[in-house]
Image 1 (spheres, rainbow, N blue to C red):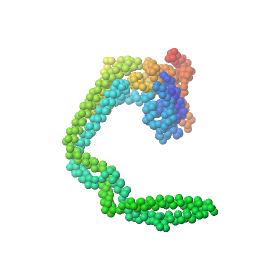
Image 2 (cartoon, helix red, strand yellow):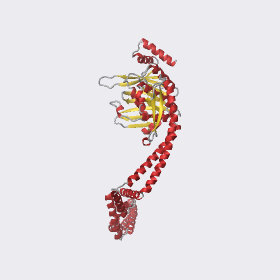
Image 3 (cartoon, helix red, strand yellow):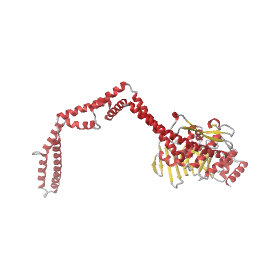
Image 4 (cartoon, rainbow, N blue to C red):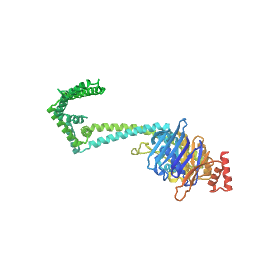
Length: 543
């Protein structure tokens, strides 16, 4: 549930705050005042894709902040910042977060139903998701089993195609594979061997020179009259004078420490010399092997991993050709088994949907009756598709058909439903889904499009009933809906000077201000008659 939303620099909004009621909150205002910008801000908090064009002109970034309370008692404070260059930053309870984490934390709590949702309802592909969402757990397990079986069948079919493609490989490809395999196996490279040889070969090629260097260093340090003896003699000379000047004692101690270091270097040089093994035959063999490796790299590289991968590909192709019939039988058997499992899962999923479809339609039709659409109904049909048309969504097409009257034939929504009818069908579906899922806040953008009069009153009643169990926020142009709100905000666009950018304000209305706004919605002005009518409507709605 939304406790508060603050919006800065979104479209025409410079700074606005919305504190919706726990039940029904209405947003009203002239067309073009900026109501859509508020909904865009809500979408950003739900984790939808950021659009840099939403940043108010002349500003570096936009910021949307919200405080949410969940039914489980968990509170969240979230923030979304979008810069003019498109970069987006998210925080949840003061900690940095990703957009995906924002979607997971806030997205399930809020359902935004805008005009584009009405258009989505006209796309048959969206209907199955609505039915599945309503059916919930009773259908979810069947859908999960079907998706698992579908994926396994797809993988089995792909493996069969791979074996069939390999089996039809030309003689030239087979000869090439045998050449590659023989060429690489003649060298028989082992993983990591080339890198190890390259690392040690340089030392082996310079073994004699390294032996001379290490021996020369050892002799210069430890040989007769070497540096170590000279340092010890100097330290002994200095040791005789500390009684006269303490500085000589310090110098002698430093020389002795240096002597210890020189002795360590001398030992290391001697050990290095003693460890050198120079075998011309081993060196020559290693040089030849490195050259062989480099030949493979030129042909199949540039990395040794590429060489080994080429070998595996060639060996796999040859094996497939040599044992193609057995592999084909095995792959076909695996596919047949996967298809049997998929068929059983498809039947179970269809059974679950066929069971849920009429119950879902009945609940939606009950809502439609309360929306001044008595006699009109939807029919939730399921039609099994050919196997080649199955998708991970299911083996059948689910479609909502619209029946304007009992005596008329049910047809696709897009063909016969008017804009107002589609809006009311969408509202009825959202009400039904709202009862079934865990969504706590429902936001409707101009759900009253194309309706008025008695239908407006019916819409207001449905929204009021829904607000008894959910937080509902509605953008509306109908006074019948506006008077039902427990909280009422007016979106006002303030015109600026010719060289300035207009600003949109969000004003909380109460008492007289609300009466004037309802009067404006009724007649376009605040005349005495319209004011009296507005007072009557508000009194009736909240009496």
